[in-house]
Image (cartoon, rainbow, N blue to C red; front, side, top):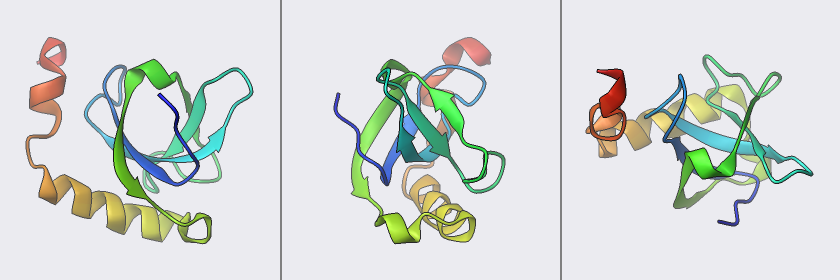
Length: 93
């Protein structure tokens, strides 16, 4: 899976399973850094293995990668897909 900076993704594993994030940086080892603007801010992104993410077709412009914009866009993504954590993270229930 080829991800790019600004792409909106959904976490499939880990403590943040089911959450929506945006890719803010690519790591040289093939992992990515993700942020949601609230718990994981752009200044302190989380490193995540790409195998634990599901990519969407939505890509944000790099200039839009601010905490406020991320919160708004990801909140909109969650309302469009209200299934949330329950469908992906059955092991956590």
